[in-house]
Image 1: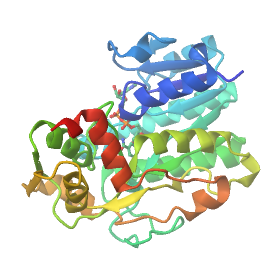
Image 2: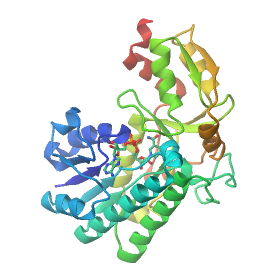
Image 3: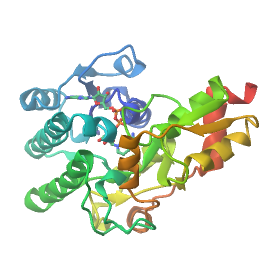
Length: 315
Ligand code: NAD
């Protein structure tokens, strides 16, 4: 039987991933952990433990106590916040990852951690960004993510640890708000559409970035973890994406459901600079070829579903 430890479980990805993993593998099989507690239902539907991932001994003790065989390491500081607090980002993003890898090595666990389109930089080809390409990011988050990809590859080659990972684009969900990323606008815009019928974007018109709907992201994690190891060449950094969009494109899709929706701009230079350093659209062909990645939601399907859940159709 699988036993999975999830760090940063109360975040945007973790809160939905834990629920889905518990549906598949059973409530007791998934140990959710986070730095903070909350009234979220994942703290009640199965095991929940307080865990600061920079505390290696505490992580080892919890993993050992629950006899986990899989670690899904999500705790991190995201791109915009990491740029504000680079030292904290280094300590949490690299220290936490190193601790999680060491616990996985000692307990012989399968291991997953997400990378990001932030692992690319200004000198990376921006269109149809290849799986294997130049990675010279100029943000602390990007530096952490490239280092993390390399570190996970190192643990595979050096210790034979079954490490796997995805380079996520901006993830869009109606369940848990995002935690300080550059693509957060693509979630906020839907909430604003439903509550106010208008949105002011901090990302400029014409700034294309990759995005994916959360259900596709969760399926991608589970499919990659279940994939036959011998088929994987790019273990720790598969490009995955569902769409490349700018604020206008999302607004146009929203107007098909809420015709009066209006969009204007008040660009935040800090987050815009991060967005400008990222690709416009990435190539996910390695993920498709090596483990059958497929995104089910395009922009229109995602928009309908988001607004449906947020109550937009009633407006
Ligand atoms: P989030 O910010 O929503 O959640 C992070 C969680 O980590 C929070 O619940 C927070 O309380 C917890 N945390 C913070 N410090 C901690 C510590 N010291 N110990 C334990 N927990 C701590 O993040 P997310 O969006 O769920 O992202 C999860 C992972 O996915 C991160 O590695 C992130 O870089 C990556 N990622 C996310 C996106 C996205 O759009 N959400 C895109 C690309 C990559």
